[in-house]
Image (cartoon, rainbow, N blue to C red; front, top):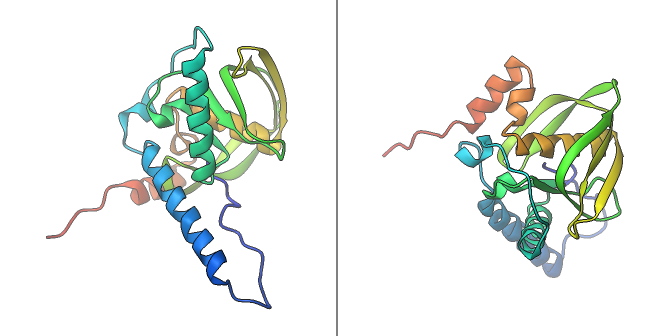
Amino acid sequence: MADEHAHEHEPDDEHEHDEVDERAELELEAARRFALSQIRQYGDPALRLKAHEVETVDDDVRRLIDRMTTLMHQAQGVGLAATQVGVLRRIFVFEPDDEGPRAIVNPVVADRDDATAIDDEGCLSLQGVRVPVERSTRIVLEGKDENGDDVRHELDEYGSRIALHELDHLDGVLIVDRTDDEHRKQALATLRPRAVLR
């Protein structure tokens, strides 16, 4: 899932960016573009496939989680599912708060509130698109961590939204499937490959 705050900057009334700041920003943008090139984009068949349960949390799974966490950070996102890197395993990484990234293997929604809210969502696999999506405002998410230990996350609002977004990815469901007809049409027009004029 894309982070809607990724491109917000604090106002700087007194100083222009110096060369060091500018170089750092360019490096961050280059890293973001490279990470996005490693993440499957809309139209890739992997995004429509259902991921399989992970039988054993081993070193391969941990390496995948490390790679996904790095890509998520470099792409300036707050969540990334294994299907978004072309791996059909039920794993996602997310960062619902300031406590750092978390990984969850074989995630299951154990409980959810009836209350829902609609908010705009973006996606690292659907560049340039933001659409309103209705999600549960509180869920309990259970699964395994990167060590194979049982974990349980009680998530409200933002965290719940991120987790449900990533869970959708593991079932081949995208935000364009969850929004209304009007926003879906606008999003698909943005995502449709442009004709190349020669």
